[in-house]
Length: 165
Ligand SMILES: [Zn+2]
Image 1 (cartoon, helix red, strand yellow):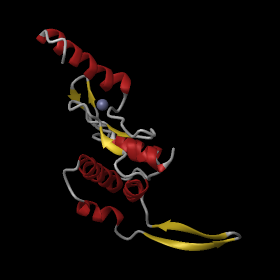
Image 2 (tube, rainbow, N blue to C red; image 1 turned 180 degrees about the horizontal axis):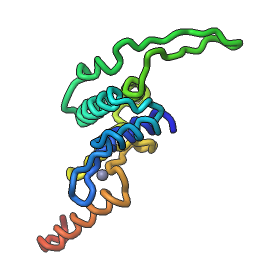
Image 3 (tube, protein in one colour; image 1 turned 90 degrees about the vertical axis):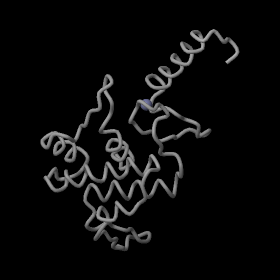
Image 4 (cartoon, rainbow, N blue to C red; image 1 turned 90 degrees about the horizontal axis):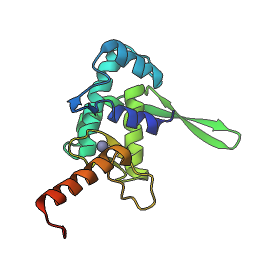
């Protein structure tokens, strides 16, 4: 699992299931397990920090906050250059799981601006990363949100009796 997958997994850890908001990280034990599965330690401070970073990143991707809330997530992180036979590699130091996820978000802002976005369905809290060439993906999943909205529009059109809309 790479850092992009981990970022998406964190952003999508509070889905609405059958109309009810859920939170994969609400329970301390489950959250610790989640952190370990994604390369963290699963410690209580890390889990608390992960929840904060998730909330900030979700707000950021929705466009409702600025980056200042993330300052603590990357505090103290630095890179050390190491010579290799072919050049130099940079190694991150002091980067815990919340920091690595924050840096991955920042990397995407540069390499794929605008491609990380909230699902177009207002009743969905998931996020998507658009890998398509056209860059027009709107739904976290065509099978769920895409088809559901299409079906609703069709239903509304049929109900209003306006075949042209
Ligand atoms: Zn969705």
